[in-house]
Length: 91
Image (cartoon, rainbow, N blue to C red; front, side, top):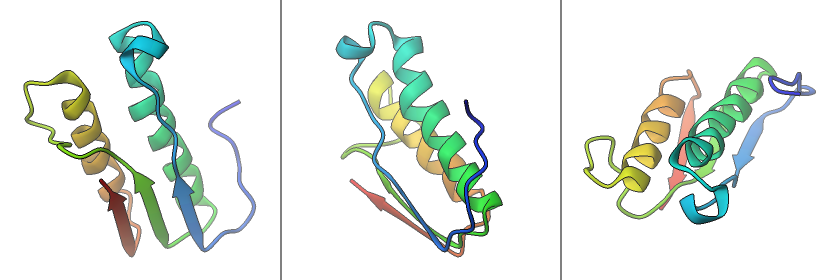
């Protein structure tokens, strides 16, 4: 169960994601696309990783009026603040 302890790592790659339709609700979508992504990124940082790459979404923007894009933008801001030397966001 998360948060998990990961073995020592240099790099973390996160490609977790769903859709609101598949998840079943906005809250369930956020649990995957924000909470789970952030948990993996935090676990990687605690394991010593200095480089993070995350699959996000085109249009990600924490200020968006579109829920999907807003969650993706919030996730990008959250992972950017974890102290990684390099954060790559694939949109």
